[in-house]
Image 1 (cartoon, rainbow, N blue to C red):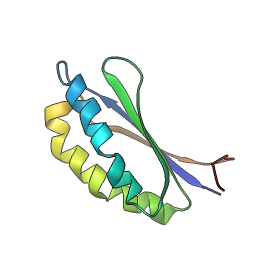
Image 2: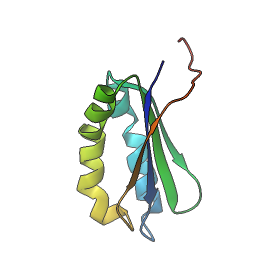
Image 3: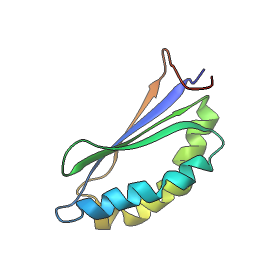
Image 4: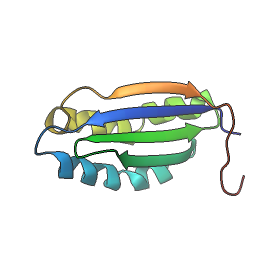
Length: 101
């Protein structure tokens, strides 16, 4: 069972909404390449509000993701794309339902 998650809320700078959406879409192969990332979603709530939600089997997987290529790329482009710093929230999973598990 997955036991750890991350929820990262992102707010695009005005005029950078499409670029942030493209960046998030382009990060999907990086998430697939992370063995400790069980599931990964990039979502959009409204014109300027986006989020990443991911789940992990353990703290090691979550830590690896936080120090991985997606996080590095996001922080490298944060000043250009984001209106404010990413809001990172860690949570523990109480129950899950995942395909094939």
